[in-house]
Image 1 (cartoon, one colour):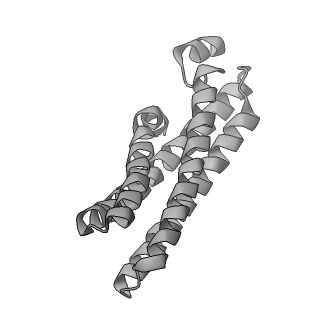
Image 2: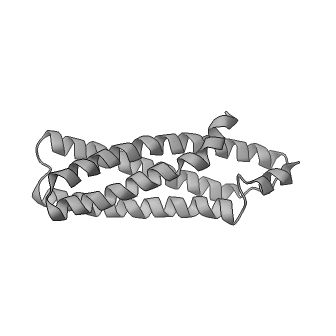
Length: 156
């Protein structure tokens, strides 16, 4: 499944963008009380979760390949990869939970007033998970060369 691993660097930017825009739209929707922003927030949350699933799947494949490289003698920061993988999985589950919660609240017509402010706080907290996961991934690539041509040359 090396094909999926190669997609990881291309896919990861979608959930980062969608979920970050979701957070901004959630805040805007609650503060402006405009239905358009609230509906857009929900759509971006859904797209963010769907693309995060793809990012986690491709990332898991990339981690498997990195483990094989390590078996061949490459210097791979396995601990950092594990931390990144755990952060990504936590971020995915967190936003999936927000999506489920928001869906239930909308269906029960309880997505109003103070509940919306609680969701804004939860969304902002989720943004910190996005930042942490992205920062770890960036460190793996830019500080350790994981997944780069330089790292692949080290294996040969």
